[in-house]
Image (cartoon, rainbow, N blue to C red; front, side):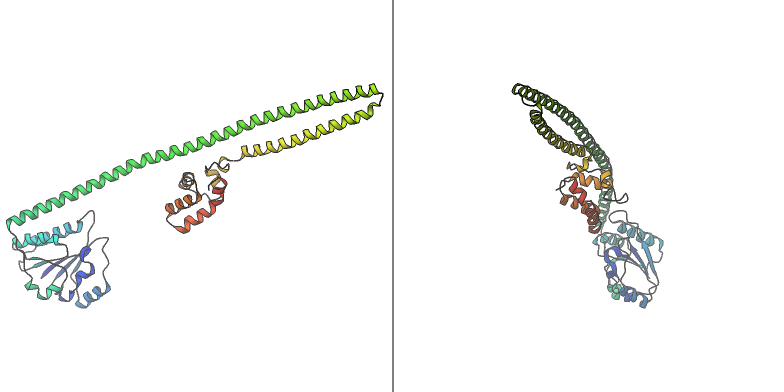
Length: 349
């Protein structure tokens, strides 16, 4: 009778090469992890033909480096202590030479433990030599095991420190994003306020200018009419003739005023349209959630989309940002296609 401990994470299906040399009273402990739990159909077929019934599957809870090695070694020691039959042999099937320290230790204590890479050597199992170890080698083995334990503890501590640092780093980044968003909102509000103030000033100036022109026109017409009346009276000409000339001059001046008024009206309407137009459409390059939702649905919207649009100045950079965020060309492409007209409207090049 023999016990076999298969380090499946190390040898995989190749460790079962030579399974034909299995004896019916042998017991196989197949130790595997979440990352190594696939066995080939060829090996399975050979095991069925050989009628391998004493196969025990042990799933190792991998929690760190060499987790399977430690648990295999522990289980080996447990069976050695439990088994009273001294004729029992113990085999570790692995390419990991680190097990040789364990083999030498048990051989030095008279226990037949061997390391092989598959079942092929079992054809002549009795000829497989045991390895012996002296006191110095045992001490070296203990020192190596202690060093491995210390390294494992250091690795776990380093991992915990990195996790804590990552959590601490996330909080400032979230605060920074919130501050950036507030800055954008404040800038938009200030711009709207400035536009309204400028429109009010322009309106007041235009109205004053129009009133002044109208008053001047009236004064000019009155002066011209007075001159014409005086001249006609002096020359004895009918006042009506020269009144026509006055009226013509007045009409000419009135037409000029009308053209100026029309021009000012167009300017006023353009200014008013610019004032009522959202900041996001004023070529400022700053997008807003309200305007963005005109192009995409609430389900598609995320704050991250708005952040990417406001982060980059060009449409190409924004498209790359979407690709990087979603890691799916179909999803990012569809999203970009929807918001592209909006990007153009806010001045993205």
